[in-house]
Image (cartoon, rainbow, N blue to C red; front, side):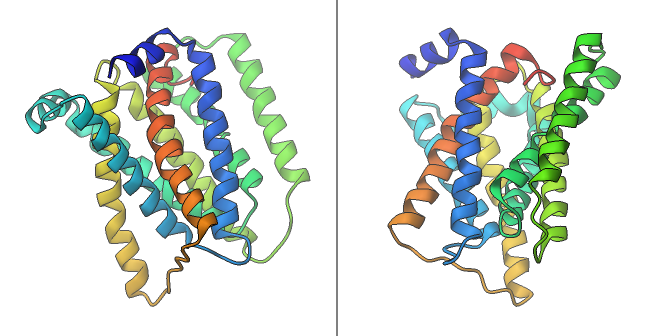
Amino acid sequence: MPIARAVVKTASPYLMMSAVILLWGMNYVVSRFLVGLDPIRVSGILLALIRYLLGAITMIGVMFYQRRGIHAIADEVRPYQRMLLISAFFSAVFVMVSHMATEFVSSGTTSIIVNLSPALVLVYSVVFLSEKLTLAKIVGFVLGLVGGLTILWTNLLFTSGLELGLSLALIGMVSWAGYTVALNYLEGADRYVVTTVNQITSTLMMVPFVVFVMMEGTSLILVLDVWSISGIVFSGILASGLAYVLYFSVIESLGAAKA
């Protein structure tokens, strides 16, 4: 895929990160619209599964276009098998709880909480990756943390299910931090292959959770109309296909803590 690779290689990592932030930020709004506002069009956990399934299908299409065979993909991921499983697990947990959180709290609240995760990534990077801790980093993260918490507190709406929504969003924050750190250990691997395998593995990991929820007697909602189909396609193809490829590129360029 020469054109896509050229764009990824030549584009500024900060420009790519801006595109990722835009796609993922819009995805929280789309998620809230689909799963949290009447009429409910799809259950959060089901949206998570469909989103990653579409993302996986999108990336498989990229693999076919690049003429990547199964053996070539297996050879590429073999040195990273353990870390790929870990990253896929964190990714699966994140997408499930973040979409479930938007059933109970606003998209802005969920997004703010999840985006406090760089503080956890910084701590890990300093302790385990020997990243230098500078005064500028400390001041930047403290200001970001205080600002995020202030905005979060002033915009909280005390409604039914708030505690559950906040708890799910906090789990999403921790799992996203774990996913970001795991990506740091995948530097050097082909990002298209890694994204494809990650999406497929995360999708398979989510299936037992969805089955368990259904066996517990919870009825999952899926209403197909132009709004739900458009939202699901955006969430699956753009926010889970294109956005993850760009995010891997940013990780390789800037490192886990900065990304």
